[in-house]
Image (cartoon, rainbow, N blue to C red; front, side, top):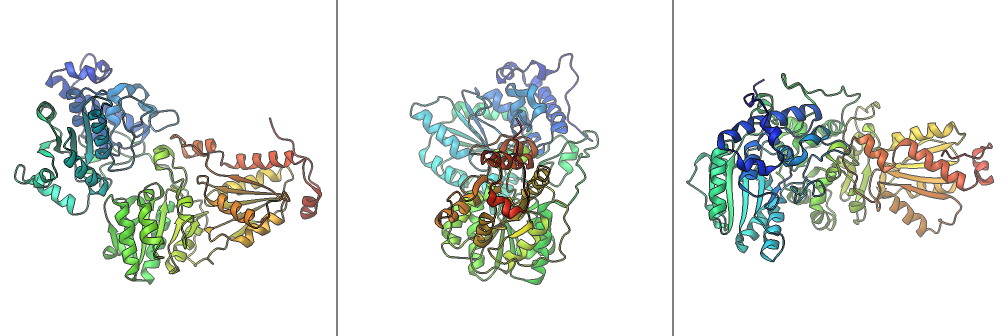
Length: 623
């Protein structure tokens, strides 16, 4: 595989770099050699850790040029999304820690304020950099932190309305601000839309048409070669010397630049597992079952084959959501609207009002960005938009910025909304069918990242009765009511508790709204302990259950009630297993909660023994 590498020197140049100040005393030839070493080092690290490789390789020269010309961290460098920040981290004192990248206790895969003074603004979602940068610039003007502000934003991120809102405001304010447009014609997938077309045309005819940015109040410079390190340094030095207001430098780059395997890949190695540098072969574990994303896509294709009104929409995440699979079957009914969740939601609302059946497939963490549109344009009008919410719960190495923690709470409080969660991949198939058949208002279903549980899949989905859960295993003393994909952990906890002579009923709620009140009341009335489990934040499913029980006057001590949710804090990146361990949502945490609660109650009451039909000895809680 081709690899741009540095000539061998007695002492690697990177070993001499303790921070950006060391770059500023290097001559151009030395910086160019350092770029080769930095590229090789980035590839070597990500080959062992996995992560966002292509985006980082595309900004090697930009990163070096910015840190050489600007006085970071006094000057603020803000990376949009920041998945391209690995070279930046290597150069800013974190090189020795990079083999722990995206692991528990290691550097984040994104910029993070608490990690380094060279990360003045944290990110992981798109299109925030210019807004934040303008905030820093105005703070400087008003007596706050001094220094220049440099924002690096990708062409894909320019498809989001927030970027244009910031450009509009920055142009009007006229304050000194540097925006570098990192134009590689890709975000995760190839960039789409009229903006992408405009930028491509602008790059093809340098100097001919810069009217848009200049009309918005920016001084435009470019396009320039984003891999010509000397040219970048010259451009940035000139702009820094002469700028009086907002400036946009248009740099043309290649995602995955310098590594053949990345440049040849369809997604330019956007996100990779560990891989062999020589061959580019990624070391992915053999899946025991298809991923939830593929199950969703396959189920939606089957429903769309029966109903020509079914539409699939995503916001720059075709491959991540499975809409790319749908597109192969129904190209005229698949829409990637760019990084524009707000538009995606209202676009879907318009389609629904026009008689279509839109499925809006967006990660939970990104759907947050379209919440006003969900409220105003969908829920208020009662429009039957179907929300397929991927990446529900904790997601591992991408950390808290990508965790799907809040969607149950922010959707279930909306009048007329139906809110579901799949406990396994078979249930997901049925929920796709349920959503397809549901025309009574907006409906959502959430499902986790990663592979399914391996349960047999139905040949076709069957619409579920709205607002009805199911008993999975019958017991007696303890009722575990799971909402979502922690059901498997509940079943494992049931087996653990059986060893202590504690019979357990396990139920799958399926719906947070409308809540299956008959199931909830039956479990509450017939058990000694009633526990709800969900992979979401406080204020979600448990709050709905407690609200119902309190409203009915049932919380009178007859049955102990406990809730297990994500804790009221953001959980740093780690493996999914480690994150759920920290969250206290694994089987042994469920079993321990049950044992401790029953022990605190003095064992089983006569009432519980009547339901059990046998005596269960007092439980001893382990130290």
